[in-house]
Image (cartoon, rainbow, N blue to C red; front, top):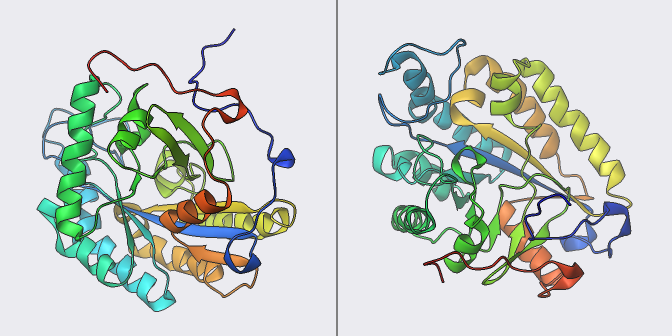
Length: 310
């Protein structure tokens, strides 16, 4: 038998109870914008050039990433404001130490603030439970102090989780996590501290994976967003669905890409009566009310506690 996470059982999307999003709408859409801070000359770094660079410091790639904080993020803030679209802001805690003006500008415009770890210079999945718990607590404290509101959602840097991450997030008071990408509806993860919602987060409609990782052009990526939106509106007649789009300030904020992404975002924000344009946190709140957590539902069960962790 294959090893299991023991968080949830298999469930086909065609055999679930029906519900609706607010106002009887069928498709919930949110746009996530990642704001990330990277250490200079140490730790992990995203690379625009391959093969990888020589010895640290990697000035080229660090500078490319920093463009998102100095320029790209501000251009995207203008775009969201013009479209009256409030994104879900996925923020490294170190952004509040490095460039607090940027997340504050989005916060002032109504963006939801969700936690994205301390920095993308590290992963959390390789940490001991007590060290991972400290990372979560530290990131939460810094973001809450900077944003003036405690984050309710979590996306791990590099989508990194240990076996204990859902337990630790639930213990820390998080309501939802974005790390899992195996569905088009939210679903409950069983933890030692009750249910933790998994809200779908895109790996295909994600500029880091698609534009940077697979070298898909900006025009083609914008077309992917528009086509995905049209297809999911049709599919949502049968089941209420969630569509997410993931952007990164250092990627989407580049001028030649922004022109295409602006077109795609405008298509989402055009005021369709069957579409709820919202945030990941609002999706989690509504789903939790419509489909409450039931301990042991479907046969899944919380994992046993690791040594030293409550």
